[in-house]
Image (cartoon, rainbow, N blue to C red; front, side, top):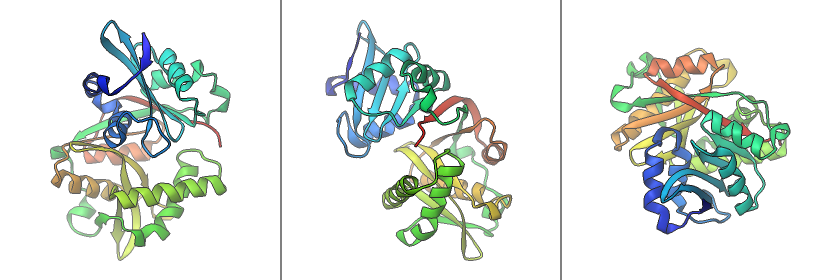
Length: 283
């Protein structure tokens, strides 16, 4: 049986997602922020569940921004179709474990509308095991939470990240999305900058967050500053700060083919634990 999820299902939903915690960070974080509210405000969405008797086996949510997010180990195709039919929203992307995301893409008939497909590796670290980069350890690079005064630097960087990393089409829509995203993350205290010789040289943040767990996203260094270890320092600095606030575990995903990024994360102590799919629709 597939049906909408309500507040009466919250305990079962939390337990199910908790059992798949590393690959459910968007679902868990959005649920913590907005609850089971289907609306147009950030983090709100329509949640649909598949049940085997009384046991919840699969979940999909179709969010305010058009993203379909899955934790559906037994029925990704059916649950994705049900979520989109229930929400009546357009689909802007599909996120979840790689096999689930691709199954949903096929089921929704959106393959021709998707940006080029590339699997992501899913990484995890326990923050008591993180290794400090040399530049951060000796103070050559410092990190701090970003402030609104940094937006003149960060908004163009986010625009470049959207185009270079996410495959967005350059233009007005991408620029507006980059501006909105950075303003929201900085206001929420979820973004960090690395500073060298008084200059911002890299940035990193979180795209999902819980009291004990964060998911790293938006890591960026402009091309002329790459290869200096600045991104590694930005990621590490953000994780040291939230570790001091009680976070014990971090997750991230990055393209399997992105060897430079993978080297950064492995050097910090991240270990690969699975795969992930970030499938975005063409602009």
